[in-house]
Image (tube, rainbow, N blue to C red; front, side, top):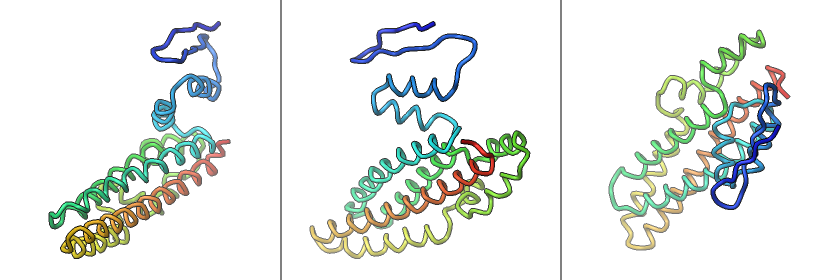
Length: 202
């Protein structure tokens, strides 16, 4: 039995009521009746239940990579020593932590999944240095932090040059931050995909 609610705006929400339902069908129904920005929010909030759901999360985060990089570029134009690298590290850490939890790579989620499928998934995941760093709430892996720090030094030097220097600093910040974010996102996606394969989720 379907109950139809008149939603605010130009769409209608359909909610299927009953004692039994297919989770994938429910998600598909919700996605079909939500505007794009709410679809993204829904997808990121749901658990990873299949390779397709993981790919959708990955695509959504990919769009966010550009947005964070643009903010980084804007901050790089400010003539404040040390501001850009500090903000970049904070933004990258926050972004990758969101990916980590959204992909279901936190210890609690993996422990439950390991018990359910009777496989050592948690141990396998911790082979990733990035996952280890996020799980322990420590700094970014040395390689990532070093790249952001080096970019910060270059940006500081360019910012000493009026006008053109600030634009160059913004470009360096954008490219470096986007590269680090994409690298981290790809690594977490790789690990999450491995989890799905180990758990034999379709």
